[in-house]
Image (cartoon, helix red, strand yellow):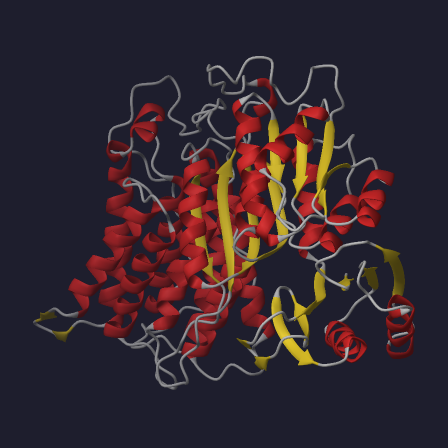
Length: 585
């Protein structure tokens, strides 16, 4: 499917069938590969990092790979479009790749099971794709790929509903109109976006979308993919060379890093995340990774998994935002080409009576320090042994923001990673971090919800590693650690698994009650079995101050009996809130 030779010339298609979808995917991939250099050279927005063509190609290749992987089970064009869109979304790279994946998703959502796509269906798909692409971007900008997509969609809808002397519009009429409108809209992007006008270029993402639509038009027409020529700007400024290569200087110096990750969270939490990321960065795009619903089949329920993209200066804040609403994994961080080093820029400073001489540390201090809230003396000892600065969290009430801030300042470090180790402490930690940042320090909160997540994060900490890289590694380690807790009910309450009475033993996994029983060990064994059921290479059992004698030893024996290959460690944590805390990595 990688070469043009799959595209034999033939009669124009009346509908987009399974074979046509496969040929379109192959043709578009081949065409993007041919024009990657040209598209990369056009890339000046949102940053001049020269990778739009590469990102579009990587995204489409991921979609084609998913299409090939499902070849034996795909029965029609609707299934093929769904596979193509889902693969593209999961493999999306960069702003343009995310937008392309949503454009493809729209074509899948309007397809009908068992029915090839006619002119009306394809037009509706292009319109839905343009809508999804725009909704995925937190701050849409005109003169970009979004503008080109909307122009193509509008033209397709108009063509599909028109009727000429020869009768109703054909599929070829519809896709030809879409491709022509996209090309026209692309030529006008130069005048719509000042950065494009400054360099005399058209939008790079829009150019890529034109390539994809040209490939569709060619497949529908029954011909081979033509060698397209670069499209000039509407009115490029005079220059010695007619080439449209963007100068290699930073266009937007505000953000130095591109962060992407997969997120498992609810739709409501994702809405909150989008707003949070927009407050700290730019180019925020969040897309769903559930399989597109196909008409005529059981609709896909909204999936809990998302892919997130943002440009920021503080990688830790971007990851922290995701961890604050759900489970983060597969974090990717890229330095934006030509972007300035954020550590070289002066930190913002608030001049008030509390700001003087209260920076996080000094220039001669350690590069990166870790501060952890320890809810027990044994846990504090474990963190201390790893060089971590601890805040006492073993009292009946959480530590105050002032307590946490004092410990941050006592580290003498300019850069600090903060581990709250309990959901109720996360807000306190964030408040302390904000105050420390006002004084000139870099503080990242990795919102660990349990001490075992904090221990996992500390295990991969490297003070000599660049700060943002260290935060990423620690966040990934924490996110990969599931945690179970034993608690004793103090009053009657309704839980997710039934009513509990005072004195009942509650078993929680990742903060949710999953078992209610009378015997602490029986509930603990049940929690272990649940954790082992999803796989665990390493298990840590933290014994609290109120645990019965030999509780840790007995739980360890249960683990070894069920999963002898699992590495088990038992430690005395001394925490008072949970007799047992169990971590699984």
